[in-house]
Image 1 (cartoon, rainbow, N blue to C red):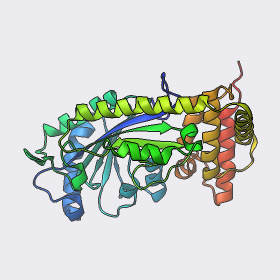
Image 2: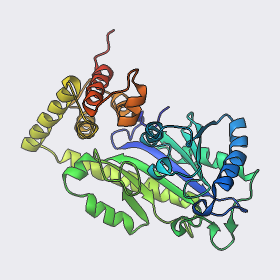
Image 3: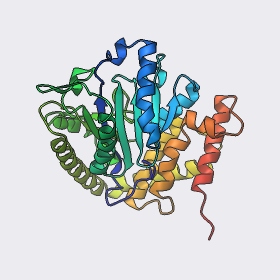
Image 4: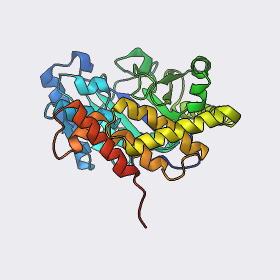
Length: 339
């Protein structure tokens, strides 16, 4: 199941979960110092066992910038990986949401991204792939420092675990700065929709661990799960506090947003993200009755610029044409289903 098809009891506040493991292979310089010949050699060596295990290899030197950006939009690669000019490859197994970036900042970035609150399952998926590669390669490891990584902030477990949360009530109430400050005190951080360096959009935030040294993977997952539970509860309390005139104004905003999504002739990706947040909030509050999280979530990827362009039989020749195509896609996805 795709990561944006949110399911389960926490669907109102949690969109997806991701676990990423950073690993480097002894005998090779870090990726930033690796020449093209070394990078290509590493890619071939890593690809062999993964392709045998059913992974699909995508060599980023062979694809267009639009296709590379589409993989960013689907959260399989980082923006930095997509725009690098040096050799790099993605090994992808979409069942389980498993992706391995080869020659990003580290030699290997092994990740699993799953819908809903699924940290333990995502960790198991990523660890299974890491174990398979550990049988083939000698990972750079220190008894004192743990796994050695390009960036010192990843030393230790080399693990980044994150949960993408939907927090419209806390955002409306102006609580996000306070929340970020509180989370930093316990070794967690708040990032935007596309991770480090990206801005918050559509009231969606990635809550992830900052500390990887001197802590086990299990402790990290436990701390993050506990924090997510508390944040979800705070968000739900904030939603219940919206009453009276404030609720009437919100209802009007939500229904106008729903109407615009259903009937607009053109729509930019920025406008879609804003309307997405309003309508998703409306679903959570019971204001929007006949749009599901799954329908809305699929659009979060399918109408992004690169992915939308690739899905079109005729490549949009202008931004306006793409905005018309986006509106059509939204309308077809949200159209009432006939019995």
